[in-house]
Length: 225
Image (cartoon, rainbow, N blue to C red; front, side):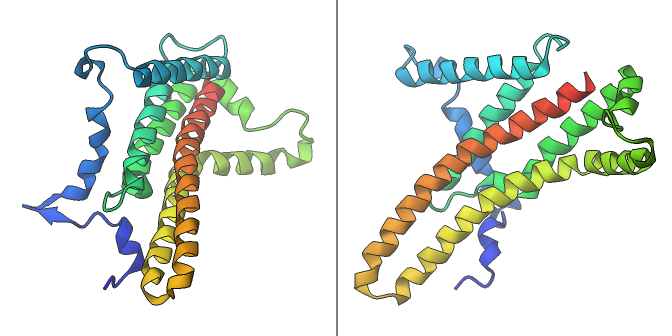
């Protein structure tokens, strides 16, 4: 019996003092390299089109002052989070993106590098960004405090948003799966249909959350350029 419901999201499976649950993070690397395919498949063609579309969108968000190759960071971030989210939809595979250790590893260094770059190279712009345009002089000190706090909590909101959204659907599926043993046979088909619909929803959430994480990271970086 599961003593703690949230133990589903705890990477506690160990062998020789190694956490085996984190191995699901490197499983997508098997499918990505093109060197494993003799000829480009339809999957490779579709994936290249998706990456090219994302490249154009990130390039538009970063603006004309972007650094060369900066969109590759966010396209790679989208790809990695997406490929980590998908294995978690299968039973008995730990979803790395549902753990704050994984999400903070990306959110905190990205935010910190943006802040260091912005304050060193565009100091005047960073100070001006603390006060929105057309702000009354009386409200300027309060706006500086509000903007500073909202800027500091950005890595936390990035990490918690991805973790909470990935955990919520998996938690609901776990609850429904555990209740299947105590319901009647007539309701079992209804429960199965609900779980199929939730699984489809979780597939959409896996795509959307990776897109949201990379888009917000792009917007945060465009503010410091």
